[in-house]
Image (cartoon, rainbow, N blue to C red):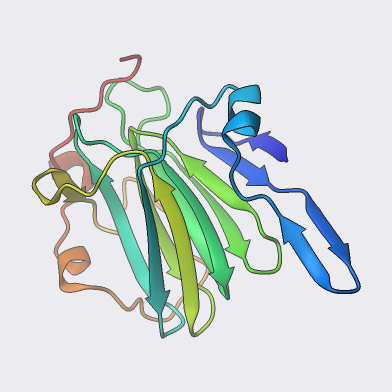
Length: 186
């Protein structure tokens, strides 16, 4: 596994080693041993999968408040997405900054998004499937969101069409108006 740091401290790109032959290929998408080797001491408790039928579907920006905050390990298993993490830790020198990367069934990259970051993705094709692991169960009472096009964040989404949004995501507040209990350094 290759681990690459991003411009946001703690947000990591993970590239599994792929073993292939005439039958196809094999890769290890998660190994507790390898994660510990790279200093990632996580215990995932839930796997999630989403299907988006239409190109330009946008899910997010989502996060859960403490004490139910989630670290996510995201990968795209069918199609392609533009995956985004936003630093929402109050007092962080990178507060409101974002990182985006294409994750696809072809490149097999994964993105690790720690607690204190909001997450979103936009589909770059029709019929996209995304899978992600989380280290805390879903908690509706702690579920929060930020509007996808917040001008203070300024995410450069790769598709000008749409986006196709849920009602919840259409009505999400700006970062400056959202409830947030993440403090940098805690």
